[in-house]
Length: 296
Image (cartoon, rainbow, N blue to C red; front, side):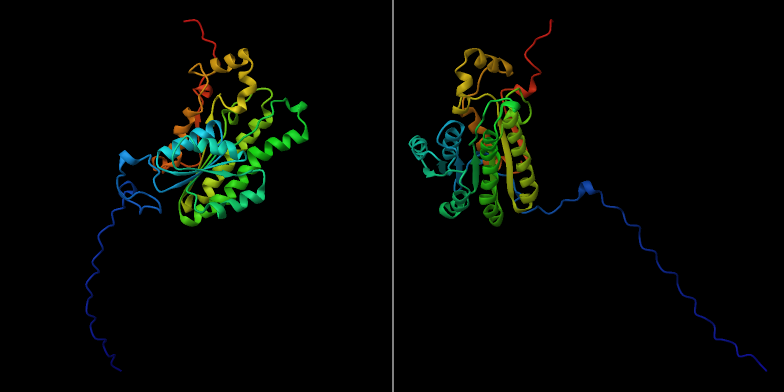
């Protein structure tokens, strides 16, 4: 029996290899800008301007709050001056243009929750209210502890919840609260106050992490010794007041107006990439390890 031969196979041309891919250098890649990111160079002459924005300053009836309100208004913001002392809020409003008084007790959680509905859209929230009871831990009462924690921490928590939510829905906003250098360094008699200020910083950092994707920024300003109603007890004792002055690198106390620039910065587009931070405005107190000068 004769085998039938299979027809010859047509040789196939080898496949042309694809050219090797050159890996892309990540340094040359340009990610798409995230929501809220600038797409072009800003007008630096207007970087700190706040025209068309509404700022709510809580505790604006005196001290740092009053100066912050006036500074924000000077940059074009419509400023609502909130204080539990309505007369004090009105007093601030008489000192500038574009300011409106608003009575608000931030220890009243229901009043805080209702405030956004009464005020409308708020673009900037500045909280300066605070309280201190200067006692050592073993001398503190439970009532005093609750009072300091209630204003310095719980009330700030309520304000953030009330105003940051609507900011997130609109896709932008800035929340600024005043902590203290005591969030970083302490002394006897400042334990509860220091704990609330450190807790406030961490609360703001957590809010920055949670609401940053929605365009809301959260920052703290940490003043050093400043001439405000909160430091009246110290100012009444010349030796104590002078010791505090000499503890800073600048050798003096701050005037409340020297804190206002930090509030304008954090409220404006000049700080558009700043969030979760604590800005020290303490005259170098936390930079100096005591005031003893070693021999040269």
